[in-house]
Each structure stands twice: as C-alpha cells, then as structure tokens.
Image (cartoon, rainbow, N blue to C red; front, side, top):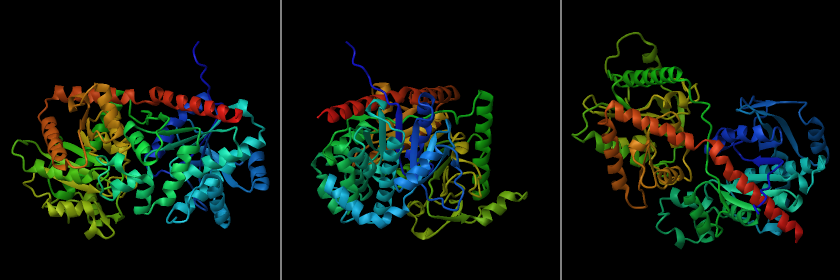
Amino acid sequence: MAKKVQEPHYIFESSWEVCNKVGGIYTVLSTRAKTLQDKLTDKVFFIGPDFWEGKKNPLFKESKTLLAKWRKSAQQYDGVTFRIGRWQIPGEPIAILVDFKPFFEQRNEIFGWAWEHFQVNSLNAYGDYDESLMFSWAAGKVVESYYKFFGLTQEDNVIFQAHEWQTCLAALYVKANVPEVATIFTTHATTIGRSIAGNNKPLYDYLTAYNGDQMASELNVEAKHSVEKQAAWNVDCFTTVSEITGKECDALLDKPADEILMNGFENDFVPSPAAKFNEARKVARESLLKVANTLMGTQLGDDTIIISTGGRYEYQNKGINVYIDALNRLRWDDRLDKNMLAFVMVPAWMKEAREDLKAALKSKKQQEGPVGDPRITHVLHEQDSDKVLGQMNWLDMHNRPEDKVKVIFVPCYLDGNDGIFNKHYYDLLIGNDLTIFPSYYEPWGYTPTESVAFHVPCITTDLAGFGLWANSLKGGDSEIEDGVKTVHRSDYNFDEVSDTIRDTILKFSQMDKKQVSAARKNAEKVAEKALWKHFIQYYYEAYDKALAKRNERLCQ
C-alpha cells in the first residue's frame, strides 16, 4: 500500500531576505513564491524584518485591511508589532514585516531562554548576531500569534520554515511554544564552512577532520554556529540546498541533512517570444560595447566575444581571483584570434559613477583615447586597496590597445540606476556570449542558473551545487557544448582551474555559428530542467517528513 503523503495547509517562511534584496536567498524565496501561492492561496506567509521606517520599500505594498483584526490583537496581547501587505513579486504572496527593535530590551532574557531550553550559547556574540536573533524571536511570536488567534490545530498541518542562522531561534521558539507546528530549517551555507573558506583555509580535503565546535571558537563565530547547530538538531526536518553542502553539514554540524532542497527559479523574466528576446540581446550588446568603447577609446564591434562574471564580492569564494588570472593567461595565448571583452560585474564599496565617463557617454564627439582609468566604471571608496584592481595591477592588465583581452570592472549594483549603464543586471546578462563563475565555495549558484536561463553558456565548478547538478544531468563531466562547462576544482588546483577556463574560453571563441547556437540551445534546456515546477517536489518531500516527525513527537 502506497504511503500517504502529508501536505501543508499553511506555510510560514522566515528569512532576513524577505522583501529585502540582498543575495541568493531572495531569489530562492521570490521565484518559488508563486508556485506555492498558486496551490495555497494566501495560506503562505513570508516573514521578514522591517527596517524601512519612514522610507518606502519598493518590494512591499502595505495593506491596512489585510488580516487587520489579527494584527491588532498580536500587538495588544502578544507584544509583537508588524505590517502586513503584499510582496511585489510574481504571485504577490502575503508578507509580514516585523518590528523587532522593541525586543532588544529583553535581549538577556531571550538569550537566557535559548540557553535554558536549547543550549544556544550567545556569550561570544558580536556584529549582526543580536539584531538577527531579535528578529528571529519576533518572527517566532508572529507564528504563535497567528496559530492561536485563528484557532488552528494539528489537523491544519502548519509548516514553519526558517532560512539560515538568522532565523534559527524562530524555529526553536515555535517548537517550544507551538509544538503542533512542524518545523524546517534550511541552511544555504553553514557558518563554519563559509568562515573556513573565507579565511583561506582548505575546506574540502580536510572536511571530515575538522571539528565544527572547535573551528567556531578559532574563527570567532561560536554564537552563530551554536544557534545553527541546535536548530539543525532540533527541527522536525533539517535541509540544505546541495549534496556538497550536505556533506559540509554532516561534518561541521554533526548532522546530515534530512532532505536536499535544490534551488529552482522561474523564467518569467526572460524575454519572449524570440523576436523580443533577440531585440533585448541586441540592445544589451550595444550598451555593453558603447560603455566599453567610450571608456577605453576603442572601436570594438559586435563580433567581439563578450563574457562576464557576477555575484557577491567574495574574492576567493566566488572565484573572482581565478577568473582574472585565467583572462590574463588568455591574453598571452597566441591561439586567440578574436577580440575578447570581459566584465567583472560585482558590487564593491562604490562611491559614485565616474563623472568623466558619464560626460563622455553623453558627448556626441568621437572619443579620442581612454577616459581616465580604462578598467573601471565607478569610483570606489579606498580604491587603492581594492582586490580586483590590485590583481589587475599585479598582472599588468591595463586594457592597452594591443590587448586582445580587455577587462572592465563594474563595481555597482545593476539596479537600473547605477549612473553608467542604467540597466538591470538581467538586461545586460542577456548580451553576453559566455559567463564564468569559477566558485570555490558555492552551495548552489544562482548566477550560472540565471545565465543559462538567458541562453548564455557558462563555466562553473564542481564545488558549486549547480555544477554538480549539471554533471548529474550529463551523467559525467558537463562540457561547454552542453551549455554548462563544469570544471573540477579542489583546495590546491588553482593553476589547473585557471588553465581549463582559459582553454574553454578559447575553445568557445573558435566554435562556428552552428556550434554556438547548439550550445545556447543546450543552455536553455538545462535551465528548463531547473524550473520550480520540477524542484518543488523536494519541498513537498520535506513537508511530509516534517509533518510525520511532528506527529511522532506529539504522540510521545
């Protein structure tokens, strides 16, 4: 007899990135929301922090009438204040933005509760720990308030899912105070794993030898590690986003993941039909080439191969260092017979758009020679200590006229208002021929996912969850002809990775139109396999496990 699968009737999800566009978790939640909302209309609630006091949040549309009676009751009887509205994303799910600041007055009592009930050690906390846990505590109270106000019961199959260490305390609070709610904790990257990689320590060769608690002390992240570890052990279903991060959880949290929730996406942001797509690609290329030619005083044409990397400015973890190194190796390669224009689209500590470049872009005069430094589009704070420019200086990469490979640093958020391109990242991504994301530490990897969604073949590594998944589709090493080239990367093979990237770019540059078209088509096929309509099944498996565990504990 087939096992009966339990499905939720209510889902609460909490993340620091709800209505707060910071990183990849925002993409996970915002693209998946419509899939859940379509099935559980207005029974899906996203809980985020409210720090837009006195300012308009363009991602949130407040409603004074939506669930108004509950909101007033929660403030009056449960001591938690929040705004309710719609998250301005596809599906427009209900979003609850919590004012967590009042809980700072109870900080010591809250930390004492966490220690008494779950042995969460907050003694050595610093930085954003206090702020995150106050938000997390408030989020837990929101779930408790809703559950009790509407008289829900075990039969209502309520799920609470916490994302990253910032919301772990909410999961622990819910378990203790509303045990009928099934809890899920999803770590998108462990605190210790990210810290080890970020501190230039070898992560993978020694993974099973590391002691997570000891490393947390050594790297001064004991408090974050503690709440994360206790959540992993105490929720009804502990999850992560890829097999590689699953191994990390097992080794550093001493707890294997109960379910792998791979990160899907929706492709509704990709222009369609073909005519609209082709026009968007044409406009993107024109914009990229115009800025590059103006900045460098060149006349690169549409036959130029345009490549880029993007994401957060994690110089080593995202492989920005190996990307630049590979480009340097390529510029000295006699086999390269085409012009190559490479962008580093990574937000840095940006001060402002360059006024000289803005003026040159507006000018109708023919540009004679480069505009200032021909390698960067914006002014940085402490520009002399920037790692990207520092590496380019070390390698003597200055975009000279004779260089076949030219590299331009775009150190800003491409939100449509950067002052130079004034386009969103996606509106430029579509104009690329090839993208490169040679990550060292990348639990999943949305940047390559987004790339193939726009039919742009990409290079990634097998230390990224997406790269491993691409290999699984192929049943072996995925190559650039497949739409995704997955490079083998380890703790110590930097030179090998750099050479492989150089050779792959060179190979791509020598492909004819038919071969490039086939690679682009295959990239599109890979993207289709990563849609939420395929990956949502893993969430429902996690919901089932969490509800089953909840039932089991309530019977004890």
